[in-house]
Image (spheres, rainbow, N blue to C red):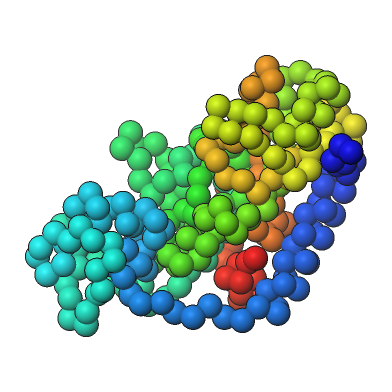
Length: 272
């Protein structure tokens, strides 16, 4: 039996996202707090607001981190009280205040903390309004718009980025030509790309428009939504992430951001 997908309309697309969000809130309300683990070096770097923990481990292995003046290549090094940690030659310290930002990213913005070519990044949008050092969780490519979380909470970043948590995302896709019913079924049934099989959670035409497609997905491979349609011979004219891990774009204009509420932070921390 073929996997069925709901009919997508502008309203039903939002309603489905809202239903997923409510279910996630109910689950988080029943979930116990995660215990704090030992302060490994990569965790320490992540909690300094530099990057997510996985990327911090890569920085350590590359030799970008020193402990008491000596390069430390072991991400699992247990940080001791009194240790002086530097990152790329500069002293770093644990962020005392955790910051959680939800940004509605516009086009032509790079999803990195800084860009070697001098292009505008998501941190330039936040600007001086946030004093703490924060970083984006995951990535949206330069031309993709929509929801992005920025934080200095390394544990949360790791959780949202790890494939095992299957974080749900909704995308609205505009194509250069009509998506055929045959290709819609191919996507629905699972499409094989160069890096393996791609299974979407649901897909359908938005308001019956064959150039406008709604996609619900939890896998996080690089440019995965664009590659799905490019593989079938379509050009993605516009790609917008409208839902991310229980969060929606409500009341956030393009190029604007807001702090997450305490309730939303709890929901993200207990995401399952």
